Length: 232
Image (tube, rainbow, N blue to C red; front, side, top):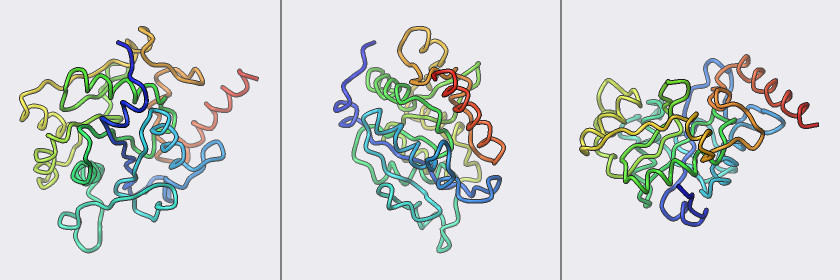
């Protein structure tokens, strides 16, 4: 499966960074926490831009407009205090504001993902016309990154308005409502077939390290530091 040029990806899909978490375990806004000398928001922006997407930021709890255009969750759902309803709220706001056929969602706390994985997922979604496209690693389905067709918006909004706002369950609901399968791409197979790779040679298990706490941030710094030592 040959991958499309970046311009083709950009025309077919829009990229969104989900930055609406409370950052309770980190103790401060994760988006502005530095990893390898750059805030996490810049890592996320670089991943999507390298995949051919010019991203926007959805659901940010602080002002990140100096980094990229931002959009808020639907105030009819969050209320006047703009209290976060989780990533599903950001997904719905992004899909409602978008114009492209597909939207790509990357959370702020996955800075070790390679851009080639995003490019592949968009291409796979276009070829298969899937409503939802996601990946697994070591047999475990990953909530993000995910590529979602705009046709799923109404069903995702219904899930958001319910008491169950689990993203994976909402994705399955949307796919089933559109009479589609929920294709999961095993990352290990994509690596073995040469479809995706990490520019620094990190193993797939490291790609999905969520940076939610100071301890996880320290682990990511160690991983990147060890890789720099190997290269030098």
